Length: 115
Length: 115
Picture 1: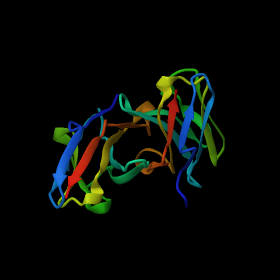
Picture 2: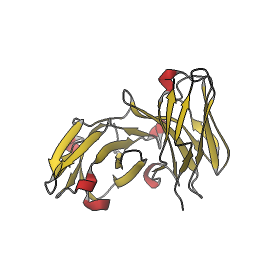
Picture 3: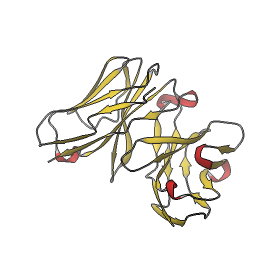
Picture 4: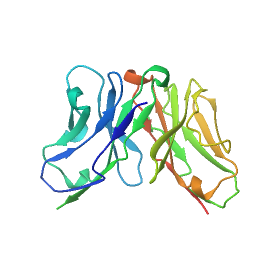
């Protein structure tokens, strides 16, 4: 079965600083991967996705993520964080085989942005 | 489109009562998912439907939980009888297609408190 680990429960950065949120996955085949963001009291919004092809994917709000098969990682990055980026971020992996289409989410990383 | 619509946004009930959560997916989407989010277990898939038919309900915690999708524009998740440990945020999501071709769009969630 697939699994996702987000090692950092809570990250604090200053506005304007760069950001990297870590995500490691476990899956036997080529995964398809997602990053979602959840603002307080809101549902999850898709930031970006990786299915195949270019391992560096661009998303909304200036976010990007890089798929590294050798490290089983799909880290999310942003060069300059804005106060409005404060939220909880979830990495997810999609399954194949008999579990095709099911998403497994990490535990989430809460991002706090200091002015 | 208005997105995925869930009702109610908040529900407070007493142990033993029946609770019904409602979801209207995005028009034209053929997959519908129910998730539960708790601090302890994170975001977990309960059940999903394709063209109104339940495909995988392996995540439904026990027989007290049931879900239906009588038509393409409406689904319910029912808990009877409810227990305090059912307190969580319940999300509905919908997609057109699944896997690599399906992006899940989430509703704002229903926050359930069982006293």
